[in-house]
Length: 512
Image 1: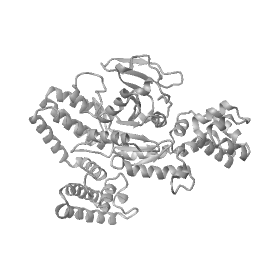
Image 2: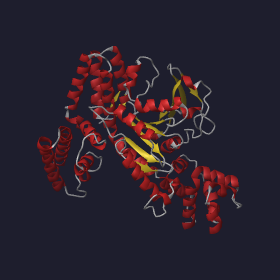
Image 3: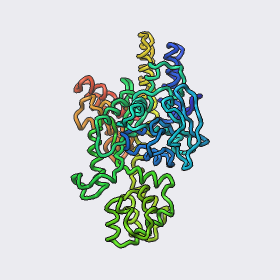
Image 4: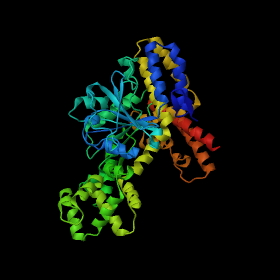
């Protein structure tokens, strides 16, 4: 179920319920809190806000381009890389610089179709950049490119920290005071980019994001991470890689997932540069022809050239050095080697087929699939939960005990409704994943499984089982978790157990 309002298209029944709650409460609260609720309503009607964040030079903008399918986010250091840029759907491509006071200035695209590296304005007075693109990807997801953490430019870092924690009013207006603005989260989900080392500020940024988008009432698992530049992981440094670069990156990503597990659902390896080139039209038939010429070189020459980037571009061969430099900028040595291997295995492979092979090599498809699993399929719950977190924070910051209680009671009524069970389940998932509730490992795994977006048979841990067997198992586990909640659990475990019991019972009803 979706609904259309004056704020836009709501993600589903939970968002509709939260939107109705906001409207009912607005006449009952102070003007200041009501203005905050208006911002929450606007955000509920917008597509899911996904921030791409990470340390400086981690390849965030390259990954943004790959996700959008256009080379529109500049990847070289410039003024715009020091600002938050929101890429959202529009019927006409345009760029708007939004100033702190709300004034907007339209800018032309650079000759290469990207946002200009230099904006020609005083960026200290700029709030953020809005880029409207006719990209189908952006109809359901607004992608937010952020300045790199760890930069020497403190203002740039502050913009990212603010977005991950609590953003300024995106409309640039002044109807909200600072307290109200800080209560409205700047992003509802995050794709966090790491390279080979996870650092303390990575952990801190993710912790701040979790705190801003989760509350007692709602705390969705709304963050995943990617290990970018996977092709630069030295296989010899990773035990069990057997000399394979991608296997080494996958093993390293799994280890990083354990480090970041309280904050992210998963860490996936990806090669953003190859993904960007394959998806944005940057890989051309001329590039395929140049790779075909390189594949015809003898083995000894080719192996020597592929040892290092400077050797690849300076070695004497029939393919011009400028052409080789262009290939290097688009694919790096790993992508070049994979393409040449494919050409040698099939001399008739077309440029289009080679582009698709490079896309598969990049790991982007797995990232998109995970985005759909974690974000898109849970958009209604994630948006509703983030909105409830904002509503709660707005009420708590009002300083009026009666107002706080009124909002609290309204939220409790909403959460008692059957359709709100998804929020309870998302909260239970977060509590278990974050280690906030101490669960035996087997029970923790069961909570995560039953709360996943997998098919019912996989949710129940019985893949391929027949419906009668699934129904019997769901009813049996519902009874077990009810008993556990009543007799065997700590108070914190009992809270989760009641939610899991309800989840199993609803699955049983569905199977009946």
